[in-house]
Image (tube, rainbow, N blue to C red; front, side):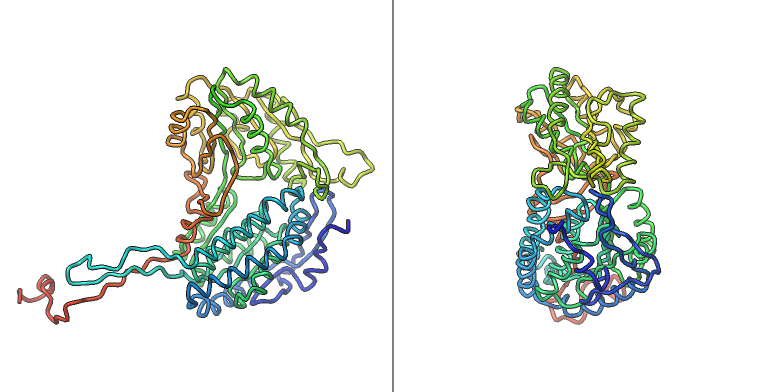
Length: 509
């Protein structure tokens, strides 16, 4: 246990970070943070109420004058120092993320933390590259200039599945563009957001430019989204909650960025490398215990490969090692909570009435004499024989569950992939460049991988279509989300009476 992160000591003053200081909430309600691997409460704190949200927004508003007025070079220098501070904290960040979320330590150390550090380094560079049309005489008598300016105070709400990366994806482009920000992490996963903010402070970010309010969605979240001084809302989470966020945001006509649910198709054509597809499906379905909106959830396999694919995935899933997230050999950790584990299990149990559970479909037996027996674990699960319109195929499960269905023609495979309200991510598997080219054109998703599934990089955008929301995280496209475009036009004639005035009064001079 000595390698686990000590949140009680680190956040003794509270789980709110406002104007550069940790403080307690004032909602009168206490939140227990539970280690999902053991069921043990590892930290308790008082949730943020409306007072903390108001204080954080006010701090961000006051900090905007300085941070928004800084030069791109000054902001870039601060973000470079921020990346270095995150690298110094890499060990704490990984241990805190694994403790809070139940992630295997190898996932935290090799994916979540280095990816977030790389994001900081990317946006440190992006801060100096504001794109726009060249200044010029687009009208014969005027010179036009495009300015990209920060929007103001951004209120962001992040989910519990990738607390550190979601903090990075929301905070970094906003800061790089000169905005200030109030971030509300999920109340059950506040640790790495708080560490993230502390690292920013050490890097020289002005107090108030980044604030963390750890509170419940219906209290702190709705107050933040509806706050009249918040100019933009960025939300990542379920489509159902995203609709509520959009309703509240329209009340003050603020800019809105939504990254919502997913049900990613994994389309395997009959000329695909079967071994690669099997390995890609297991990795893509089980990353973060399947609690990933881009996870492979619907495998469509052309009939000649179908039986071998089902057998291969089942065999490989059986080798996946469940265990202590802090054991370097552990492949799969628990789900975020027992409630989430029970929700996933209920989906699978209902599917037994119309489909076949090929492997998994149950909690593991760690025995009565281990603390892991109280964890929110669930075995990797493969389901076959479900109908396209069934719940298990159409609904977002958010757990280690993959459903596989056969198809015959290429037309059918692509049509099945698109037969979903979601459109966040997808993958196509084939050795034929024309087949994969068609799939990338015709599958309606924000990202389509070819012969792989899941990898993300800071330079490329992440975001969806349809019920998966709109707007982009990461990349220069994300940076642009957090700026407003202003057209400035200069008269070059010095003439008092201009020819166009006659359309309003008088005659032509």
